[in-house]
Amino acid sequence: MTDERHSSVAGQPATSDTAGALHSVPLPPGWDEAVRLDEDPATIPDPASVEVPAELRAEVERRMAMYPEHHSAVLPALAAAQQVHGWCSPEAIEQVAAVMQVTPAYLSSVATFYDMLRTQPLGSHYLYVCTGVACHLRNAKAVYESIEAQAGEQGLEDWEVREFECLGACDMAPMASIDGRFIGPIEEGDAGELVTALNEGRQPFPGRGLSDPGFRLPWADGGAAPDRPGPPEQPDVHPAGGTWKDAEVLDMPPAEGPSPHPRPLLKPLDPGTSEVPEPDEEP
Ligand code: FES
Image (tube, rainbow, N blue to C red; front, side, top):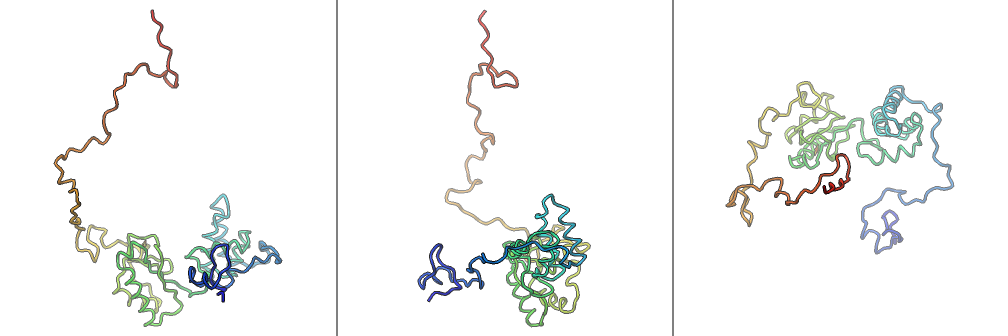
């Protein structure tokens, strides 16, 4: 029997052979429901009938004024709604739609695409631990797992704790965002104090936040990264053809290449044109 919650091969209905075999990831309920053509089209909310918190209205209008096309303000407007409501709830989306005069469906399509916009109520606060490439290379996965374990042990509630893909502060790797405060570099050993501070409502690691006064990376003054006790060594490589320093001729060829092919210059072009002047008449 066909599993209706699994996708099918493009253009063909899913069968017991195809469903689950090629696409075994469960899809959200309703993903394959037909468009409801019998329903009224999505409408733009009447601004007079939607109550919008004053600070949210002011922020959305401020953002809209920054762009010639007001649709460009959708992302910061949704971020502002998330800040006010904790997530992009249907109510928050309705309010932004009323101010921006777009359909809630349009805003939902944006909110569900971007990872940093939350379309589920997952806690009033968030702690994102970056496990993108740069952070991953600096032990971020173990840092995240330590924090997650501490959150479980210490009963951290009302916080969404999860991995995140590159928060854009790779020079602080491994780093985390605590309700938008970037801290780093963090280590596995920081996990306990980090979670304790969040549980007690304190700011963890004052001075280690990117926006904290006096913030400096530990290696900003020429020191070494904590787990790298000196400058990196060049790898000992022995390519089959030898290395450049083994070459007999160390004189590099000129960067500009060989000299131009000698070609007699007959007549220059007329200045400012591509016209070749008529040859001078023979006397
Ligand atoms: S990879 Fe972590 S901030 Fe970029």
